Amino acid sequence: MTQVLVLGGTGWLSGRIADRWRDAGAEVTCLARGDRPAPDGTLLLRGDRDAPDVYDRLAEHEWDEVVDISSRAEHVAQAIGALGDRTAHWTFVSSMSVYTDDASEGLDESGELHEPARPGDEYEYGAQKVAAEQAVWTLGDRAFVVRPGLIVGAGDPSDRFGYWAAAFARAGVDPVLVPELEGRCAQVIDVDDLAAFLTGDRRQGVVNAVGDVHPLAEMLSRIRAAAGHTGELLEASDDWLEAHDVQYWMGERSLPLWLPADMPGFMRRDNSTYRAAGGTLAPLDDTIRAVVDDERARGLDRERRAGLSRDDESALIAQLTGA
Image (cartoon, rainbow, N blue to C red; front, side, top):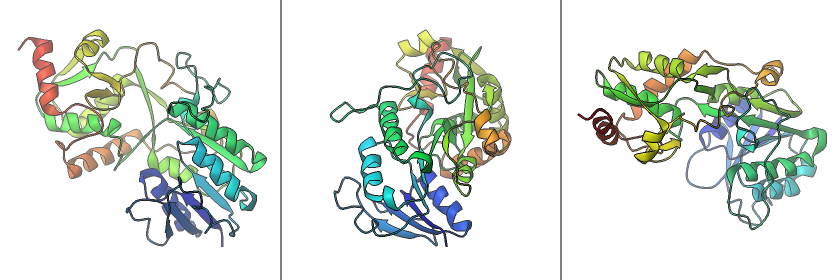
């Protein structure tokens, strides 16, 4: 039986990966800290990757596949040092944030990368992923690196894509605040498509796992239709939003999917390698419907890691319109 180790397995993406491998008939072990459960039918070992002996229980096993999604290079390097010699294939989930060029459109996997993080550096996500990739490449042709873009779907803990489903659903016939849409695009990948791509076939090299490019206006229109919103869209300029302390992309008091004008390439990456490698893309409207249903179930007015509360949004709309 195929022996698979998921470094994680209790989170949003890693849990789906563990699910997929289990359903494929593998014997799946998950290593994770905290008190969240792993998928049924998998073995969960509790362990903190900051602990020097965390891999001792695993080092005597032979692994057909290890999957790691860590964003800390030290964790990745330590895992490879402890388990690499006993692992036939290693999949690392990196990120599109490794690339330095966010201006050029249609860049593929050959794009220039950030300088890798070094011990003692202040934490920077992209640099950590680059350093982690370097550790993975020491495994040679046993290594596979996947660089996803924005991962979306039901249960997304980042709240970025789901924010718009909730914003349109909660507004109903009232207006919704949006950034300037002209010339802006969005590019997402469904979490289940990504999990499926990371399961089964033993691939090598590096792949940008991203969806097709859609105009942001079109994507928001499709989310709006699924949420049943019939109110007005109120566009605010970048300068106006920044002046009113609204953040780009993610985080508290933000407008997700909105990027600075000098980053037009960030959500216009080439995905031809992903498609050629057998990667699939769920119909966007199917993903949107699942996210709208999930947001309604979890609560449209719940606290979020990204976006605006309806009260904040309403106050901004009043200032924008002079109402």
